[in-house]
Amino acid sequence: MKAPTRTGAIESITTHYIDGAFVESHGREVMDIINPTRGEVIGRVTLGDEEDTRLAIAAATRAFATYGRSTTEERAKILRRLHDAASARVDELTAAMVEEYGGVVQFAGLIVQTGINAFSAAEQALPEIPWTRRWDKTTVTMEPVGVAGMITAWNANALFICLKLASAVAAGCTVVIKPSELSSLQTRVLIEALHEADLPPGLLNVVTGRGNVVGAELVRNPDVAKISFTGSVAVGETIMRDGAATMKRITLELGGKSPTILLDDAALDQAVPAALTMAFMNSGQACAAGTRLLVPKSRLDAVKQSIRDAMRSFAVGDPADPKTGVGPMVSQRQYERVQSYIRKGIEEGAEVLVGGEGHPEGVDAGYFVKPTVFVNVNNEMAIAREEIFGPVLSVIAYDSEDDAIRIANDSRYGLHAAVLGTDLQRARRVASQIRSGRVVINAMTDDPQAPWGGFKYSGVGREYGRYGIEAFLETRAILES
Ligand code: NAD
Image (cartoon, rainbow, N blue to C red; front, side):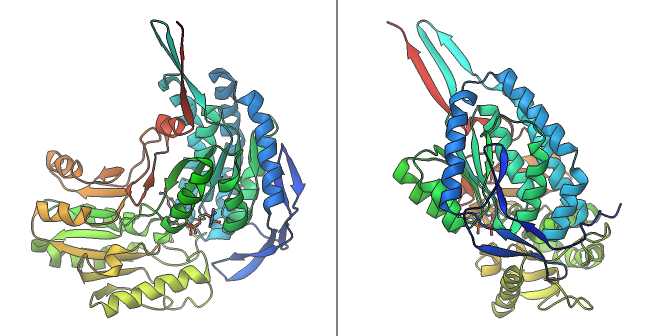
């Protein structure tokens, strides 16, 4: 199926979603919305300011007085309504992601569906939480933390909004969301969909604006109890530091430089395509992208040949075409960032096996880069240490299983990892030594009840299922004499 495209006149978004209604922005700054496939302006968004943010926080605070005391049955019903409302608009949500972000349609559809599934996953996880425990004269209850501020990245905006909202609603929190300003169109489609869920006014509020304006107000405002953030390490550090002034509870979902360990018993016809899929998913603009491929020295030549062969399946082009494997970068800035890392890799002495600098042949418009694989990389090079956030894979050779584990863990990140091999016991043994929040064996896979989050600089706290809900809860004990 080719994705339905959103066509027509330039769209103008001038409202935020506050207290159950779309209200005109108080902030006056207008930003262009650019289609990265063609590099064309397709819309304009009026960005919110501190006043819009404070109105949204006030609405969430009022709503919390009631919603914070809701029963789990009431929350389950709301989660079901959110699920149904979002499900009704899957095609439109996917099309908006393709149009505004350049997400490859197959992956964009998956991202949207994963977001929608988060509502049913949170509903399923409700009974897992020990809401009330009693012993002797003591009663312990799990209480919603309060108004939650949510700040999202652009690379899977709908998924982040749904995930965070689902967990917060399950916990009994009301929310103010500041989506990425690069995702205004997608946010609009999603919020119009969620509006149909007939939520209590003030439960969900959304203010699109700049991070250092709307985001900073959420972080500093004393009426916001919790910040759940998905984005870069640099901004995560700012949020943690600034949030300390009002003792914010903080969840940070940050970057990665995820290792894929190809064991020496791996079947290359399966392992190499799986490794490349993990490297280039979402056009490499994925926090979990497996951008370091660790290969036994003894199999390096065979792996290089397999990579050359398998790269044919990663066609660059129109993200709306289901045959496309890699779409454009989200912005000119992101295009330049990827180019600068490809240059840096060459300067550092790595060898380009596939790809390289510049636009792919025959593709002049838009922010397309060549999916690039470097070999002769060592783990000290910038292309092995820093998050590039584009389709650039570094192949690093290792001597032994212990050496592979050491290299995998020699990173400031620890979000995601993969182990590829035919001996499952051995793959599990290796997986259990990787210091990452998630390790997949033999392919990229997901489980909406399994925790998601990072060790080290990849973040603080977890999302998904009961782990995500717990991040929005406080524990209260009542003791009778
Ligand atoms: P970013 O940090 O630049 O921006 C993220 C959000 O923070 C945006 O909404 C932005 O407006 C806001 N922001 C910026 N400055 C702020 C401030 N001072 N105060 C409050 N908010 C502020 O990140 P990005 O470029 O949008 O996203 C890419 C990054 O996100 C990558 O590092 C990627 O790895 C990470 N990411 C992590 C996960 C995960 O689950 N761990 C998922 C996706 C993306």
